Length: 218
Image (cartoon, rainbow, N blue to C red; front, top):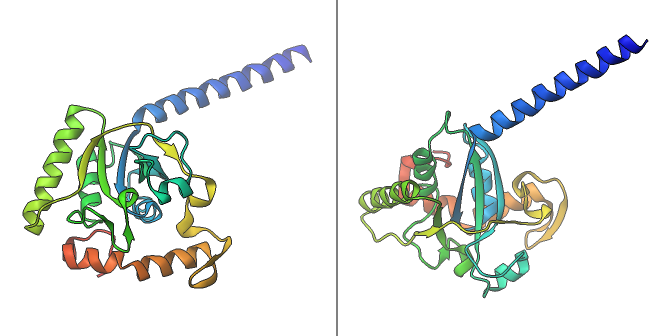
């Protein structure tokens, strides 16, 4: 009986060690980036569809207010952007490719917000953590300027603390909870689709980027 118990304990320990090593290896194989592209629900929705992206999380960054709420950021004065933290596997998709997808999913010529959402919290930005990321971000904005033949208002800013938004704002685009909106009482996923269309996001992106717009059905 003792030998059997020891064998079971040893087997569990081996499994735990394998799981821990796998977890460490997986954690070491991923990287994160933070971008602000207007409504974070939309950016999160777009990038969770990209192969190589592990997850996208809605939140706030770039400001001075600690632990900001959605209401505080929306009201202004916090300095924060609505932003999305994207975790990705660099073996499957590069930082350069992700930034190009990002810039072609927004209106980088608009410095006052995005689409129907106006104000500082809806401005666009790329948050960089090192000189390499900054150089790639600068190249991406040069690409946008050449492609659109217009001044680019998207900012490149140093990365700062990222605050995760509350649970109601995560995966909003596929939520099933019923919410009261200006479109009536709808499931979150329905409210999201109605908002995105009414805000004119896809229509504007399509006018700017045409067939190159990565998340628009053509």
